[in-house]
Length: 550
Image (cartoon, rainbow, N blue to C red; front, side):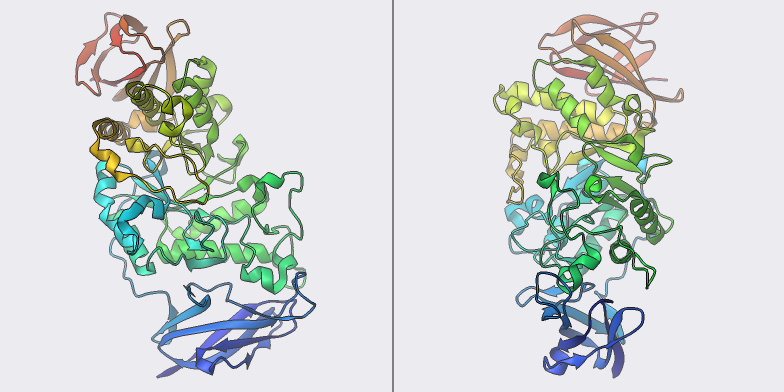
């Protein structure tokens, strides 16, 4: 049975367009232009899979005026890789992506303040174990590992279709198409569904500042959707490709064209794949805050009633991007990594910087969900790859890594782990190059011990309201001994104290001003204060984590 299927292409400034496809033996079908700026053609088609492209008289300045060019559909949800052609799937006379049926939409998911995020670059996470497999199927096989670790949110680095040379995917060619080589859309949905079943949220890395040079919109009418030149010519180091012009307003159609397109992109991914949050790349370069507020609201509308997290990557940091009057729920906090690394990687002990990293309110952040803290990310080396760790004695390096883990997991804010950080991955930052996880490291005791250490801390974080609160108080600031003590609490029922020794000296019989009875998280040993004084033994480069007893 045939159904009338509409093909349309938004190109208000272009003079003519036609449709070509396997259904016409690749002969041109004239498209009619409406007052709304769309070219349209209606074709009677049976259910099945079809391949097609558009031909259009371009308005882009890098071609001759009105030159005919072939372009893929900017809204295509699938690209055939060999010939780079748009793919359309029809079932029961409707356009579909796949036939997956969601199973766990009613599952209760953790709130934003409860999250421990795991940043994942899919091919590198898979390593050599899924070279020729559907990588989403491999991710499914690793869910037990991630559940054992205890994380409850996964942030996927870009999954959009992009040229192979952009390994990380931060230069997008097709904004609604899943990247070829990662796997099927059905398996991605199954992975997200199974994550939800296990109480794990999944975030999308959103690239809305720029695109790759062969993106269809560029070929159709560059200056309608993009700035003609660099948006920030004084900052060429942070120019990654043609930048969307969110200031351009079409008076005739009364729309912001770039808003319309990227809004459609966000709604598609959230509705089609049930993502639970978005990390917005390069927000400082994107700059249009009115648009960003609108886009975040559109994402939450698309998500419905479930929890959603809009996260900004804004470097260098600005506080007013988050909170009640900000455009985002939270932002990446690069200063946590900078100050943390300074104080765990060498001889530096700067109390003000450590306190500022642990308590973001000192710098004006409103609460725990307003910052995402991390020690490593895709843009920054793993701790074990930092020079101070590479050149240190191995035993000392792991002590410093565990000290950093305590700070990360007990600081005010939402912690994020870069994949492999939990077992001491040793590779360096390699932009757009393969950097596969060495899963074999888990077979070596120091790496396995670090993994177990992170497990304990993550479990503590998930089960102690104190660490998920905004409350933090410093009760010990000893510059001479290089000790910092702080208390996290939530009411009377939940208290967690940390006593961190940043020095290379063992401290025996060390007194801190802390009342009550406590249990050492790692040893299980109970200690009790005498009056308001608690006496502790603290090893070098160690942070004691003490859980309050009733």
